[in-house]
Image (cartoon, rainbow, N blue to C red):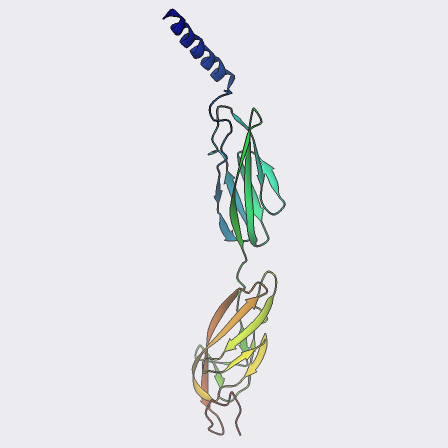
Length: 221
């Protein structure tokens, strides 16, 4: 009986000594890497914050947090930030190492999104009639989308003149044959295949000199 009590006492003493030393040699043998990413998806450029403090110890303190961000960048530390400037989906990996050299890794993905292009256009000539811009029926009008913008380039300009007629190009000419109010829609597409649209009302006064309808796309004989 005394021998059993002595063994228990020695075992408890060893446990205390091991705990004070900060690293036990039995039980779970490696740490567990865990982290959060915020934001995990965003339009570039943006900075993501990574928190590895959720990683779990396995009897020994974690002494190293090593990050790779999927774009060639890296860092160390439990709390780190990283800037993404090029669109893409990046694999982010955290590796934690404890004081014995035991390690564990985990990964997630950050979606760095391409910004949409910005569509806009102007048109001329036009006249101001009591605060409203108007154009004349059968008058040739230039529609100019050259002020549209994108971070890497616009590859396609598509026009819808609100009456069934369409055109393609950054600068186009068109004339309406029938008076009315038309919603002109410009859609631009960038080199990543992303697109956006811009709508502007055009007010047409008067009638075509030859009285033709608007089905011929702006011609009159």
